[in-house]
Length: 413
Image (tube, rainbow, N blue to C red; front, side, top):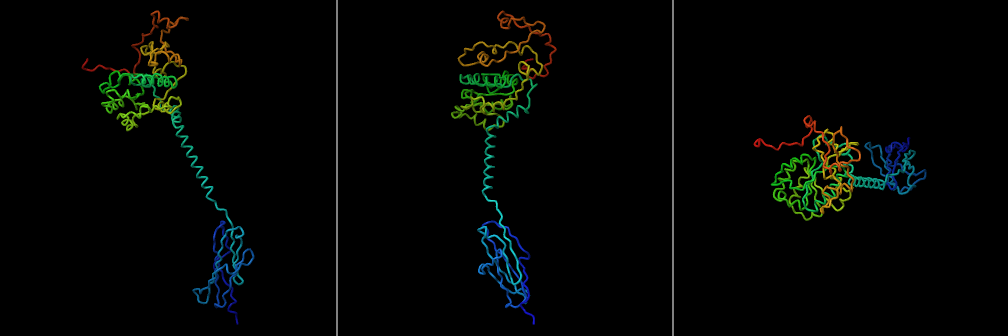
């Protein structure tokens, strides 16, 4: 008679030897399930071993139940492990009668949070440095890009780079003649037209203003407290601003930080509302430094300056082949005579001695060169003027010039 308990159990889980990769500190359950055919009295007793050494039976939980086929039994043995030490890893074997199944536990290194946090901090510091570098060097980069790839404003018939309007107050005159003019003309090579008169008398531009502003590429307004006392600033600044926008491309307004806190004039708020159409610059205590942001922002608002080696005068005028002697006659404001005016350098002398600006070009007859040892100043003192060649005035081409205007109406004719 056959032994009813002679059948070998069949492993359901694991089907094959199983390998688990776990980190230190993990918690795991090893499930060993078998099926056998026979009576309940034939239930096998599972045992567990680690690296060939048998483990105590109280460390596992065993459960048996009927399968769908009443003649078969199922047995599950679960071993719970807490992997807190390196010695907890190894090869675990589940023995049921003469059958066995193995679990191989291997330790793996899990990336901790410290490297990730350090990487995030490094990226954050890099972003902060880039932001600080951008804020500090933004204007310099913009100036470099503009000077290298910006649009050249040449052959436009303009004689000056900027029309500077300021009040007749002593502080305003000193600011323009002692700071703005020397810095822009001698350091950056711009050519300025200075004006102290009211640019909008009766809230309308005068004929002289229209002609002078049209000969300048930009308009600079020194908007001090004294300047805001003009009638058009107090009564109709909004309308006057529209007139200036019609006359010049994006006019530049300069205000003083020391006066800015005291000014309650509506013109300041109006300029802030139209920042897209105007350039509003603030003169601060540190703006006197040539490398300050004020001068960089001002140069960005001015046209790109072009210079050519070996040319005398304004190259943007020379390119038009304009040889009209009426435009380059002797100009007294470029002489180097001393200026004793108490309100500062009005463009008549001290700038020539201090900054050594070049003399204006003179035009004379090519067939009658000046004798050696005789200077032009000697000729002027003797009442002689340089000989001017005006024989070709009628044949000159003025098509490139746009600064000549006819101010005669049909009614006058």
